[in-house]
Length: 227
Image (spheres, rainbow, N blue to C red):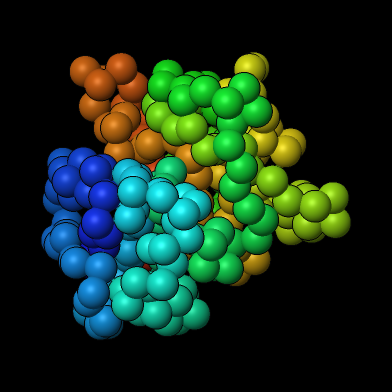
């Protein structure tokens, strides 16, 4: 299984994602510049966190028009796995690959912490190695993580099993339904505000993010006969 990590001007979690894939999965992974137009040789794409284009207009609003995003769209349509973390989640929302929008945290402060989450749906390509209802701990670091969607969309997300993770206990940003991560209707595109790539070894404070990567490899292997 081959991974690509697009790099936008302002990305700062790209190298963390590369190291996590190598450490946990020992699979090939490449950084690709945002002007790259072909991702055909990759099976999974991880959009990293950071401040793409400085977030000067709106988080993810400019990155959404980068040439690489056309290839990300094509990869999603082909059923390849797309994981958007923090700013990557915001880019996926801006690109229309996931429903809803992102707002500033309801307390108007940047929040950096390790947050407990509940695994809502463990039947997704990204959650197979978790148990349903399992509590995991992942770092958060964002000022605009307040996920919003209208009531009809929220109902659809619930009915179709598209809510992957919820915040447990305190909701750190005021997101609707305490949502921390959602998938598209097909289930092959996941966006989440917490950082799994920063929680793949116990010395990081949690290793719970590693199962997200092993789930992706397991899904791909079971779907395609080999990793």
